[in-house]
Amino acid sequence: MLYSEKVMDHFRNPRNVGEIENADGVGQVGNAKCGDIMRMTLKIDDGVITDAKFTTFGCGSAIATSSIATEMIKGKPVSEALELSNKAVVEALDGLPAHKIHCSVLAEEAVKAAVKDYYDKNHIAYDPKLFCE
Ligand code: FES
Ligand code: FES
Image (cartoon, rainbow, N blue to C red; front, side, top):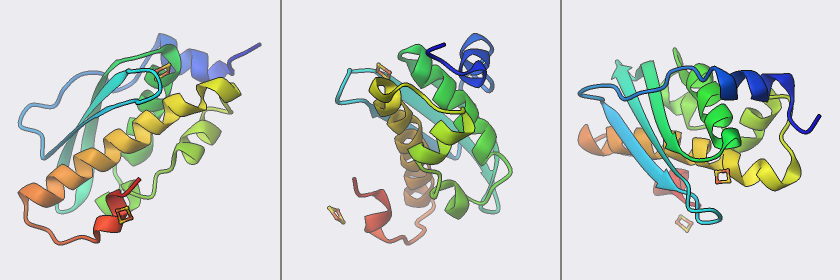
């Protein structure tokens, strides 16, 4: 089986699909490798992510990784969400085929872009290295 059961589950039944109205942070990123796009919206209260929704114009692995990423960051402080790595997302899905690893980068980058947007909008100071590729 090429894909784990978890990948198939999140692909067939993705969690937190959509767009939060008046989101506190919005991140949209594109994957240079394949041209796919992901958009992440976050609701943030007192520095804690209380809701996360995504839409993606991308492959099944991008859908599965963004679905599980929204579950992983909900309820977490934004500083912790920034530590979400594509490796952690892949591990949470019980792995991805090697040629699909780049898809998981989209989820990590979309979360980061949304947090950056939140920081910028609220004039919260941050280390620019946090958002450096
Ligand atoms: Fe583009 Fe997966 S092939 S994100
Ligand atoms: Fe931007 Fe390193 S801090 S390239």
